[in-house]
Amino acid sequence: MGYEGENRREHSRVSFPCKIMISSPVRLLVSHTENLSEGGMRVVLEEKLSPYTMVGIEVFFEKNKPIKCKGKIAWVKEMVNPIAKTPTMFETGIKFIELNDCDKEYIKKLIKAITPEQKDDSGENK
Image (cartoon, rainbow, N blue to C red; front, top):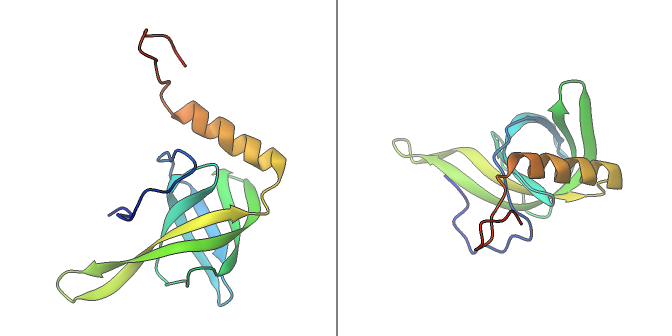
């Protein structure tokens, strides 16, 4: 179930599941990324966080070396159990805030390594 709203993304997204820890104003949430971009990520959480909420983030691209930053909840979409008709999980878009330049560059390189090279009309790599 992906976000089905208008596509206003500035950055390409890639599928790269990795462990994350989110410090909300209420508690610590542990999950994994569904997809990732230079500007943020989509995660699935068991708790609904309100849009515009500021959170602390630790993303574990490597086992013992998390990238730490702040994030802002951009959107939330309820994943409803079709039988019980109740929300069970929450797809959540998080925008990176206060991400240092070194970590931005690491994410950019990771995404480039995952993304297949695009070719132009002549067959050359872009």
